[in-house]
Image 1 (cartoon, helix red, strand yellow):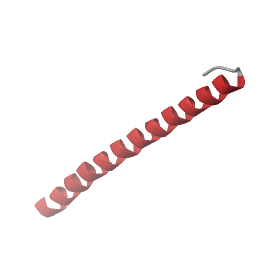
Image 2 (image 1 turned 90 degrees about the vertical axis):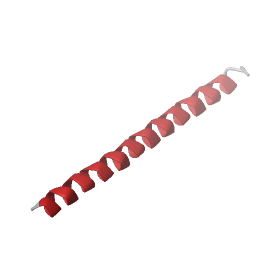
Image 3 (image 1 turned 30 degrees about the horizontal axis):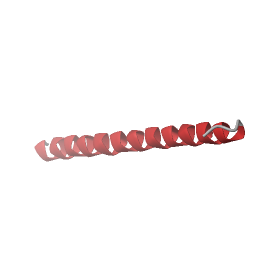
Image 4 (image 1 turned 180 degrees about the horizontal axis):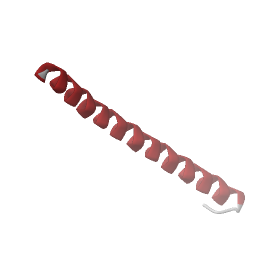
Length: 48
């Protein structure tokens, strides 16, 4: 019984880190996309 609980807790711990990194990566992708859109709009307006 202890082994099953240990495995379940270990899996939950690992999946929590994987999920956290996935969300961080998604946030960075969205941020980069927004930055690229701003740069494209700035170029269209004749900005820097």
